Structure formats: structure tokens, C-alpha cells
Image 1 (spheres, rainbow, N blue to C red):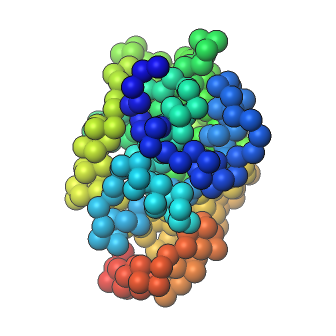
Image 2: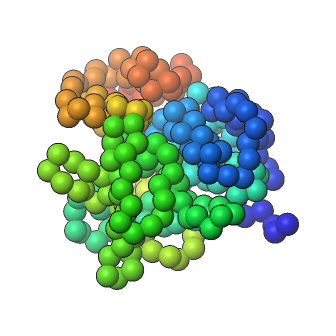
Length: 277
């Protein structure tokens, strides 16, 4: 057996499985891959609150377990997908790291900051797994093949291969296909995530460095808190929005996203919001 790359040997797999509510026998097959991905997305919200709380985003498996498995918290892409990678590796799946350039409908060239996973099954099938893209993220793995399009919980996703060789993950909007991110074949490793997360957490142009971004995707509904704007978007096209007051943020996080902050962290976040998050 090859040496662990993703920290699977350090993961408390039983605790992780309890946290995501996975039941039954885990096997190295497509059904298990789908079930794990779906359960992980349901259990962990996307959130960047450590940055606003003034703490570094730690990516060691022990730190991810303490924050996300032992506590009712979530994380952003590097945290989420590294935790999933450890679980998949522990179960014997063949996992590779993917670095992506976020597009979000724009043709502007952005740096490689997003991190996702590729999984190859014993039958030769290749799958894109991504539990950390937030608001328009996948609910289940997507076949890593040109031209594929799949509906998941009322949302439609697809992958196309551009002439340059880049794969592009897209979602279907009312006005057509919307590019989410593009990625190539270069393998990425945990050490690459350390560099990506430093940029994401500290660069002044990063959308996560100066405001709260908390998101949760479920079948048919997406909840999002960006700064002081809270929205609920449904797959039928309706969107509800409202502004959130600083003193109400902690309660909203618990009610809508399942995030429970300590009293000290709730106070710090309220202060950040009152100061203009």
C-alpha cells in the first residue's frame, strides 16, 4: 500500500462518519462515493469565519477534525476537500488534488486558488468531487468527462473540455450555461493548499479576506450570507433577500447554517459586523 498523501492515517474515521451521519457499509465503489459526498455537503456549511475572527486557517488533519468534526463548524474549499480527501484515502479510494481558476461567469484570468478532488474508481471511472465550492457547489460527484450534464437536487451541472485542454465545471442558469471554474491535469497536493489558502485568507483582492461568506446547498435550496446580506435561492428561480444586523448574526448562523459559535467568538463577530463587515 502506498504512503498516505492526504492524511487518511491521521483521521478518526468513525468520528467523521458520525459527524456526517453516514450509515451502512462503506465500500470502494460509486455508491459509497456518492453517499459520502452527499452526506458531507449536508453536514458541513461553507464558511470563512476563522479569517474574520482573526485566526489562521489551519489545514492539518488534527486541526480540521478539531474544528469541523468535533465542533459544529464548517470551512472553505481547502478545509472541506482536504477533510474529504483524508476520509476517501482512508477507505482506499484513489484520490488526486485539483487546482482550479474560479470564473463565476467571467472570462477574467484569475489565479489558481480553488481546490477540488478527482477520484478514480476500480472500474476506470473518473469523478470530480468538490464539497467546498459553496453557493453553487455540487451535491454529488460528477463524472469527469467532456459533455456530461447531470441534475442534482434541482440544480444542473456540466463539464466541457476547451480546446486548450482545460475542463470547465458549469451550472445551468435561466439564461444559459454559467462557468464556475476551470482546471487542468496538473496534480495538486496538500502543500499547494497551504499556498492557496494563504492567498485566499490574506490577499486584499480575495473575496474572503474582509467579509463573511457562509453558504449551504441542499436539494432545491441554497442559503447564503455574504457580508450583511442573507439570501435563500430556490431551484424554481425564486430568491429572498434581507439584511442582517450585527447582533443577529450568531443566531442566524446557528439557525440557518448549523454553525454554533462560542460566546467569545459570537461577540467578536458581532463587533466585526458593527465595524462594517
